[in-house]
Image (cartoon, rainbow, N blue to C red; front, side):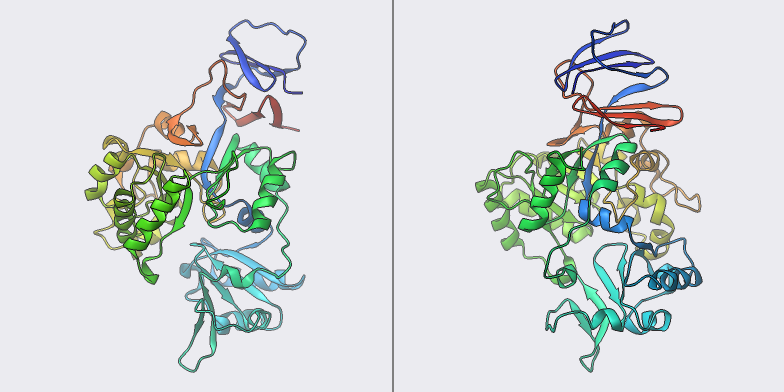
Length: 438
């Protein structure tokens, strides 16, 4: 049943058939169930504009290998997990225990398969037991030493780790976790979704364990589903940037009626993404994902092209101290820009990039306001925004991420009810999917 009367600190919201039909301060019950959250403020449900659902589900059952762990703590965690069988670790950064390879992992766990993912998502580190499980391959993703021996590092090698029989993780815990944060919709940014993961995501959403509304960037170009968004294109400067090929790709997107979403984390990738969208005449709704280093000289072109930047200021909070050590000082002012983009008239929205970033949207909003690293250093003072603006970057329409939604009559009844203690309840299409204390 999707009829509901929500009573909040600022008034009531009446829902019929999953749609808001009435707003007011003194609404009386008309036979429908009542959700009484008298201390809470009603907000449109939050939308995470960039995450990876199956990877997040897998990460929830994996060993956390990232900062602020120490090398000793990492060793203990991997050895403890190995007692129960093969180990999957996530979130690793070199600041924990230096560069990883098969020999370093063999020294920790020699006889049980261990694979650890770098927090960027771009690399896996395997011990010898895990390497032995790979099928014979000459794939360039497998790094080899001068003697041709695999080092244990897989660069963009996720495809080599997929079993022949697809066993995708269950999304029940993910749906519950997202709901507990007030998230009512997500954009899955996994590129080039194969048939099985695509079908699994849709099944999880359609009456399954994922109640959130779903937009897919990786659905095939010829997919005409209602849940299809811009086509995700992964740029990788290290592998080369083929502008002519990317322009052709944008034109193919346009011919399919799709905008384009470019994954761009370096300055060069951002420049090429903007050029490809310009020369290929990308459709409205095109995006730059991350914009980790986004040169200010691109601002006029980004504004003229109507590009939305979907960024992650939470990385400043979680990794800012590493950036201060590792990132060229010339690039630091351009890290995960927010405030200056808005000032320049460029659309901005927030995504978590979970599981590679923290899925908590409230931490993302706080990071956009504070821009403080773990050690308390402000990184990018000009990029700070006020709290109301930060929240608005999580309220964007899925297809127009830079256009914040408001609670109005006629909108789908997707609501986040929040009080001083956090999210009290979450409603999707008039159905309560989370209530604190249940």
